[in-house]
Length: 132
Image (tube, rainbow, N blue to C red; front, side, top):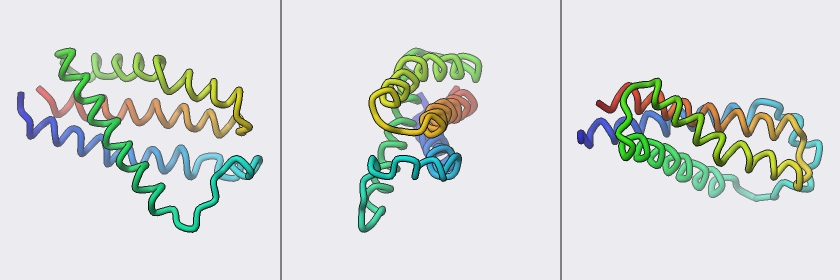
């Protein structure tokens, strides 16, 4: 295994994933977050929240790349298939279930679901292109 390529794939996936997170959870349907303002935590500084979000984004990218390597997958096609399976297995059902029990606008739940799919697809592309 080429650890340099693995580390590069994680770095690329985490970096690009941070932009997809920003778009899908911060920009897309931004006005809909205020539909139910009482569910969002009030913080004097968002630095700690952003830091934890970044750490978890790196963890997600590293876990995806590790799964790609552990299953001995090759190429973008198999990586995209893994991303789709991962999305169907965890983030999609979890986001839907949360939106059923938590007062959140349906467009916000949709954006979060699509954000997860995009984040996993970005990790898949990085892994498929960079790891041989």
